[in-house]
Length: 118
Length: 110
Image (cartoon, rainbow over all chains, first blue to last red):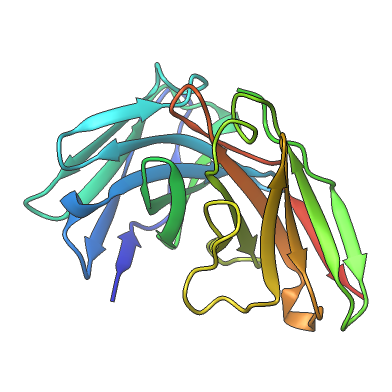
């Protein structure tokens, strides 16, 4: 069965970067896109971007485009989201979700809490 | 891209039906049949309930249905049950090849 495993919670200082892995099992990473979203405490889901692991194409939300990088390593069936220049407002749960380019996020990781704290 | 507009909260009694609206623009909801609805229980990852406006993934109850008219999509839950109490989010593909989500609706089963 399809499973997306994310890493554990992290605490980061303002200005730092974080790279969150999302290891896929039960299917081959290149078969589907991988989206990244986040949810700040008490807030809505916010789409950050996605990658087509088959060819490496990416698309980012305008809000994050200069700070986020989404990559994949098909040798370990894992996608990554790196967010740089962290601010306190980036404190949120970050999710990976398998989906097609137009959405339909059928499978989700368990989420990774990133806390930005000085 | 502005977030899609959803009511902050809706409520209903067990057995009743409720509808949650999701209003976008001609650049997202109105332009594509790529609207999805997600259910989120506290502390859990979201779960897709409807995709492509009105399709249900395998395993999702037929009590959940979706529709769209113009720039507004809707999620209807019939025969409300206690376990339906959750937050619901709509999302749409956009003309800038991105996804946009709604602000979320808290469903309370009275």
